[in-house]
Length: 336
Image 1 (cartoon, rainbow, N blue to C red):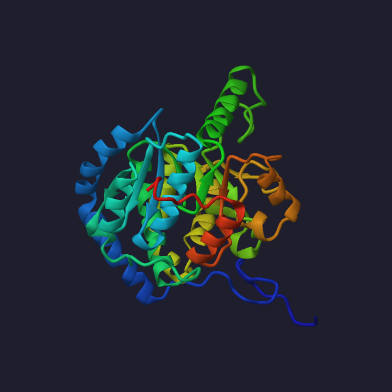
Image 2: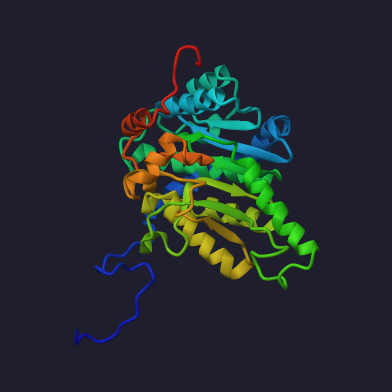
């Protein structure tokens, strides 16, 4: 091309489409309204939530989920699949966004928290597709539930409801952290960040979409582990403040990745993306894009991952069908 060089943001794709656009005034003001409610109710919310988190936490760790009634079948499937393999879900805390889901989750034996002040605007129906109104509204709940538990000082595993466990994933994260700490005590690797003696602050499942929009991390916002410290607390406070960008991009994930990049650079946040080419934490990318032999190896038992996350899938109905194809749709009357 003979065109002169010109300055451009890192959010431009090769086809000239800009992945990041500044929030509109409507998105900014809409976010301010939600943030005002959050701040005005924060002290009361923390007072209500603190004893629940204390009761649920084990080894200072809480498994955090959020769900509305439209997605509750997927929550039921997670519970039924876990119980079929004998897993204890006593440290799971479900942030219900409506009363119906609160009652259902408690009926499944799960601990719940419902905050009508902050969640009353969230639709009860499931998202019809990625980025629609119900989807974006649930993104706000995904921000708030993690930020509150992190603020209370707990390590946490956040996961979407479209996940099934083959093994309890918490021991994997704990073991990796302990390994890094032990290496540090034994001399380590000269203090290189992320290596010996320096455990990661956050671990993310690889989304699989290695595009400009999700650069540089391609972190999946539906399955990740967080250690509670000053770096992660400020990250999630910042994510809460960026709700207008979430509304503009229709993506909690895109906004979170942008902040991961910034906070790693400015504050030394240590972020680990779990390799998508290893078998421990597969998801929708593996189901739809990777060599089908890998999925067959899960079905035959040749490979036993820790979890499977049905991401990259249009809506709840498709997720249900694909779980059925995998033999992982476990919702039965005897379970629920």
